[in-house]
Amino acid sequence: MNTVIQHESLGKISYEESFWTGKKSISINDVPATKISKNSFRTQDGKEIVISGNYLAGAQAIIRLGESNRCVVELLPKTKWYEITLSILPFLLILIWGNVPTLCQIVPVVGGALGGFISALISCANLLIIKSIKQVWLKIIISIVALGLAFLICYLVALLILSFM
Figure 1 (cartoon, rainbow, N blue to C red):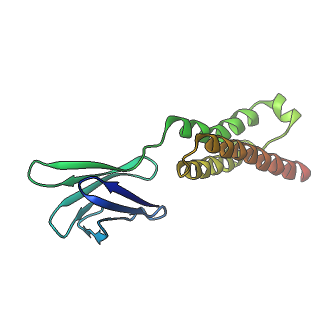
Figure 2 (cartoon, rainbow, N blue to C red):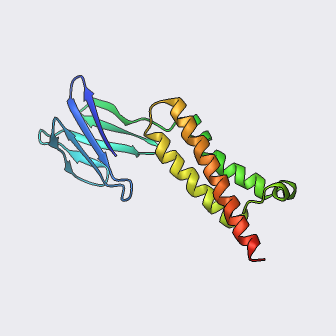
């Protein structure tokens, strides 16, 4: 995930975080900072930068300008409550539907560990996708599609299991 922020006093701040490894890098005005530790960097002019957070939780850079001066820059916004709510809906739907025998008689879905695994994967993928989108209406539409996809996949797996019985 790459983010570029234009700060009024520091200039252009570029932040990059690898989703798979969590590796972070930061540069100010196209000059890369030297990595000191996992979350600490130092610029060529001696400013120390400490990055807290990550892509999902929201990231911010604490830049020490001097002995007592520091500047906090938000690099990535925090996950909003509605993004979390929209993302857990597929998991909750399969959790509830798979545990109610009357609902499974109407439309069978695979529940238990397999249904939970499938719906949790789709929930996580949904969160990662909608976090990068700015329009709320598009986040809602994508989440509805993820909800339907989770239900469809669990339904097809249930049909597959029932066909072998």
